[in-house]
Image (cartoon, rainbow, N blue to C red; front, side, top):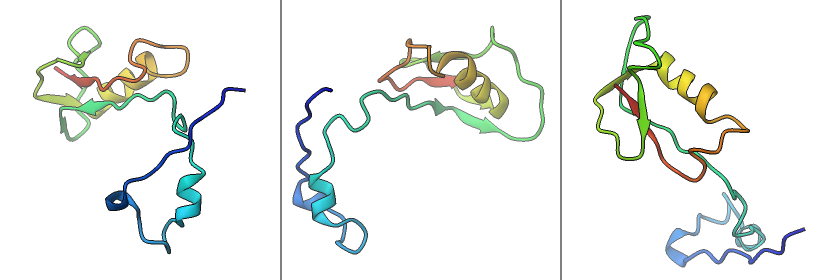
Length: 97
């Protein structure tokens, strides 16, 4: 088991005690979430329009894109971000076309 350093929250970021007691904050380990992926979608298009497809959909941290279908975001998450896929771990990809 890996040892962890406990997290010290700055005073300005401490929620009121009725929401989260200070004792609970001090028990939170720094590596509480060691791996994450935050998928940022471009402007989501509404309706049930057909997805443009994998070839037209881009994902990347420096991608410039303007819109994306909700289904394409879901496909990106399922195909590129679920366990076993490591390309986007600890990154913030933008998805769109």
